[in-house]
Length: 296
Image 1 (cartoon, rainbow, N blue to C red):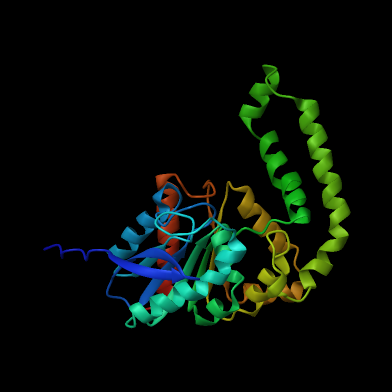
Image 2 (tube, rainbow, N blue to C red):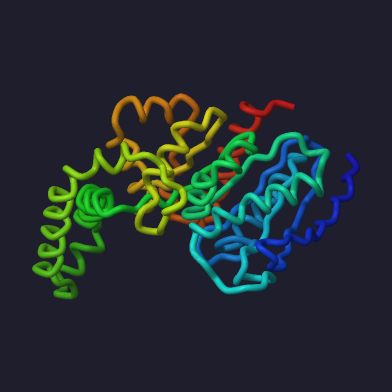
């Protein structure tokens, strides 16, 4: 069997509020393409080159992809900003992609951590996206962080042989850890009564901050009517915070999200799926979901 030559990646100039940036577009034959949104202080290859490796995997399936730099990172001008500003820039990225690649009929947005959150905070982008792939979305707030620390982190430590070895060798501080546990336990109880009001608040996108964004995120997610893949790493605090937030939502709001969201767990994976076997698991989750939701 003759191997077909792989197309060369194309450089795509992108303007974000007048700042110059670059995207890398890899062309497959499918009419579906994946737009990758970096999270945190990451450049377009992604953490541990995850997005670059994902682009190569997708190309093997003839699925196109675009990855890019936000201002302040990689080859982009400007100063680094937070994911609230990134959410606003996404409209320009999608518009540029659609204009440059008119043969693509369906753009699916992929985001890790606060890149996933940025996607959910932009209603215009959501109206244009054919689907979403959310990997360990950033959903931290005081109440769910404290509850997750109690339910997940400290329980995980108690089940860890490393913790008990350190304790027996005198290399840990059990009283300090116990004090921290009770601080989180009290915080979870104190903030629990405020949770329902915050979750049911109307989305006010004009007043978003990195501390006050979850009502808008949940509102937009519950209103989104197209397919969503939620991939949660099994060994990641951020993923557990997202799962905790969703589990504690009012029943009607959770049902709206569940109606269009497929949730998958990546067993043993960390936040960025940096281990090769976990990245492979993520890749096949994405491919199976894409084939199911966007059959060629």
